[in-house]
Amino acid sequence: MIKCTVEFYGVPVKSSELKVEIEVKEGARLKDIITAMRQKLPDLEGKVVVKGQDKVIEGYSFNIHGKFYIDGYDDDSNLQLTNGDKIAIMTIPIGG
Image (cartoon, rainbow, N blue to C red):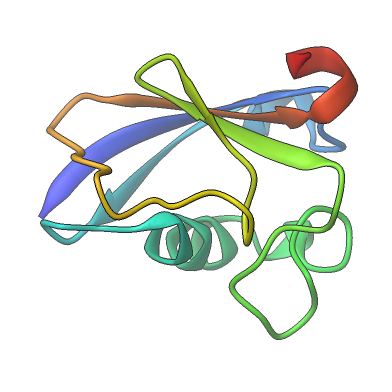
């Protein structure tokens, strides 16, 4: 298992949840990151994450290793997470 930190920018979460640790399996993809986020912060459901799905709502993006990923649009097959990685999830206007 790989431990990563997810940081939220412009995302409707409590201030105590602006940064959370998640665990994902080796070879994790965006779907796996979203699953871990849903488990850690169920309040994201319907606000950031599509209810009942491992997809973020339109208007949110990920920044991982300096590359932006828009769930469902970008190929994440080359995503290589390692222990201690930081994952930013933000609204598209904040991220550019």
